[in-house]
Length: 161
Image (tube, rainbow, N blue to C red; front, side):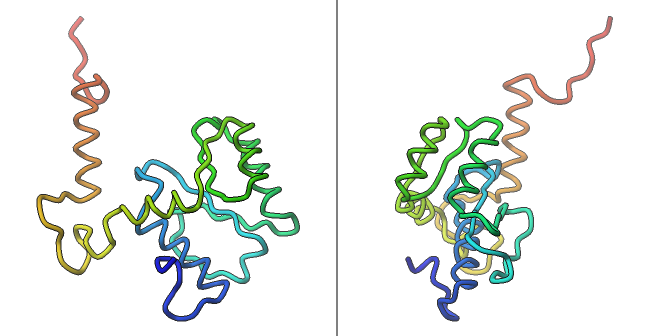
């Protein structure tokens, strides 16, 4: 997958960084409100992952990544709102048993490929896509305002008694 293979060599650290970069730039998980957790085998000594807060990253450290993923699924507050991305059949069966949704790696990457390329996002360097485009920050402000008006949430003046 060209999106995940860094140009400066395919080392373990570069591959991990490439995955995290793909997730943060392409957002195959959809909304900014959807959190992402990535589990790597091993320890963080083999990783120089920046982007604090964007993606939660766990390292298995002494247990298998599969065991850690199963534990995270067991501890999920609402597993029905969890999507496991894996081609590992054992993990897929386990996640479905926890009522989590399962996506193949191919589906996850396809979602990212459908997303707007980073250079085409508003505010990014490069050319703008054709048509009207708003920034993610402005889109979130508009959504909050519409939610206030349509759903009755937000700052309403108190009714006089």
